[in-house]
Amino acid sequence: MITQKIKVLFLDRDGTINQDTGSYIASREQLLLIDRAGEAIALARRAGFRIVIVTNQAGIARGIATIEQVEGVNRYLNQLLTAKDAGFDRCYYCPFHPDYPHPEYDRFADFRKPATGMVEQAIDEFLAEGLIVDRSASFFVGDKTLDVECGLRAGLRPVLVRTGHNEEELCFAQNIIPEFVADDLYQAVTEYILASS
Image (cartoon, rainbow, N blue to C red; front, top):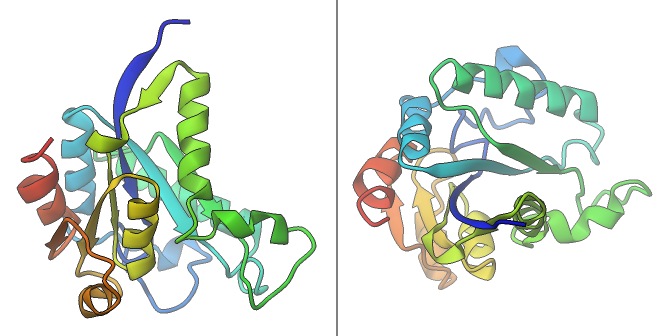
């Protein structure tokens, strides 16, 4: 098999691409893109990045949202992004929550960020297609400390955005240090990721 090296932009979903409403997003109506997030992803795609979404969706284990609802929202997000030439290549979500044991979802414990299960699954599935993810040229962008920690653990380049939860102070207090802190995804892509890749 011929192999090819690729770079990937791993993205958190709620608070990074779309507005974090403070509750689990279970319907299309609740999904609102953050300003210029679509444009940012389109620029990254044009620069050769594969786009992978990695999102904790513990609302499933908590009984707040169903798998069908989460997958429907993810499909709708891809439609919105595709209209801006910014569709994603892969999307992973983790239904597990440690406080809400569930016989079906507990096996995904290693997939809940900051654990790296979703990132490793993406890398393995790219490899199965003959695509080798260059971790040193790949980024992980999110709005929470656990996103930065997941990126660091996976050997990716972590970037924190101030949208969503904006855990900038928490990151530094816990010594979980992103490479760059941006006001939003657009600034992260235009001023840092494209400038340093």
